[in-house]
Image 1 (spheres, rainbow, N blue to C red):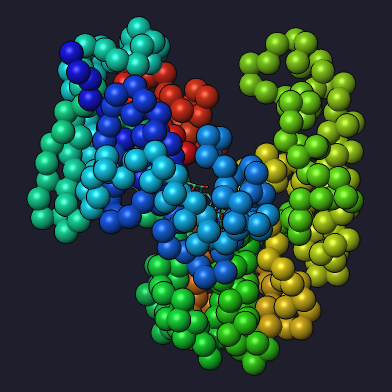
Image 2 (image 1 turned 180 degrees about the vertical axis):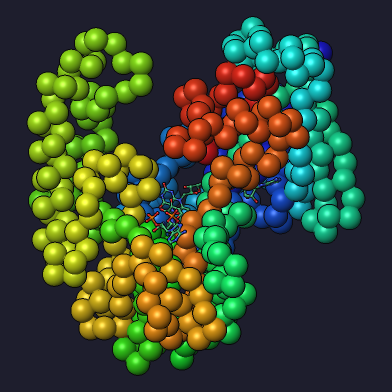
Length: 417
Ligand SMILES: Cc1cc2nc3c(=O)[nH]c(=O)nc-3n(C[C@H](O)[C@H](O)[C@H](O)COP(=O)(O)OP(=O)(O)OC[C@H]3O[C@@H](n4cnc5c(N)ncnc54)[C@H](O)[C@@H]3O)c2cc1C
Ligand SMILES: NC(=O)c1ccc[n+]([C@@H]2O[C@H](COP(=O)([O-])OP(=O)(O)OC[C@H]3O[C@@H](n4cnc5c(N)ncnc54)[C@H](OP(=O)(O)O)[C@@H]3O)[C@@H](O)[C@H]2O)c1
């Protein structure tokens, strides 16, 4: 009997999943947009790959020799993804402009499923007990179709679609502000000229201190210089890396290898691994201090009051390590970017009130570079409230997936990305 597998999303993860499932005779992909590439389809003008190129490569499809840069720009990344899809003839399997609205597992009762803990009672990818019902709509949301499938691979991405918007008490949110408030994803969606004109001549406040915030603040400072400095409001100082060579040593030698895995405690580790991680804790501490001292020196963090309170090990373990845009602190020094720590902020008519101040920070435009709710996007796609709870995990953990891919209590489904 032929089995149906559905892949949802045609970013890097969905295309990879497609290539491998095709080799087993399955397809297709549902993609909400009219193009492949996910986050690389359109983003902020100055965005480049921040991972060194060899670490961001399809293992069976190397970067073309024409791309000489260690950190290719977004167009080169997009072209590379397109070439991968063409090379493996994936495009014809993608149903474009088809947004999956919901997925529902039909068959066994909720009570029966509660007793399963082995990825669909038997620990097998396929089962005759039930099927997934995929409901997908056209681009305009005018009509929907239902697709019964045996297996779902969710590749819907974490850093797009649902913005993380800070919450404010009544009458202290964007609704009382006379200027404009947008999220970084709206800025990223503008064409480059429109984005540059949009910020030109405005007092811009950017909220956040990770990669979107840094890149957007750089673009604002280029457009407005010291005349209208761009203010960055941040909660937490972060270790961002100026390069991947602390004191000349490749960062990967310290953190991205099998030995470095032994340095950290892991859930459910046995006695030997626990002992090893404990004995090696001075090495763990020294590596972190080694990298921190390099970053502090290169970026002059102490001078700008930007030395993080947490260790570099914590930063890199969060998997949200950003690179520092070139000349970022030169812009801070010249005054075209102003860094302001804000444990809390709210809006009033004329601008933004920081840390309970009564005098507002005069602002025309606030750009919330406050990240995304990838967790919510994943949760929302399930109809079953039980599966929603499973996939959400606890508030303090990332999505609890075996090998970052499978939830043992959700049958016939994998999450990639
Ligand atoms: C600006 C930016 C730069 C980045 N730079 C780096 C970097 O340098 N290094 C690094 O390691 N990572 C980087 N990342 C992280 C990046 O998210 C991953 O590297 C990778 O591109 C994610 O691919 P993905 O396929 O998992 O998700 P996405 O690229 O987000 O693709 C998801 C796809 O699913 C589609 N989709 C979503 N919901 C539905 C639905 N309901 N129905 C149908 N289709 C749907 C979307 O339209 C999209 O095409 C960056 C992220 C951003 C936002
Ligand atoms: N290749 C590139 O150049 C590039 C460019 C852009 C994005 N990216 C990637 O895309 C992903 C998303 O990046 P991102 O920068 O958009 O989001 P992000 O990494 O999630 O950062 C969100 C920022 O917003 C702050 N924030 C969140 N909630 C807030 C609140 N309620 N009030 C004030 N501040 C708040 C966070 O502060 P705290 O840390 O203090 O919580 C953090 O500084 C990352 O993986 C990133 O590396 C890559």
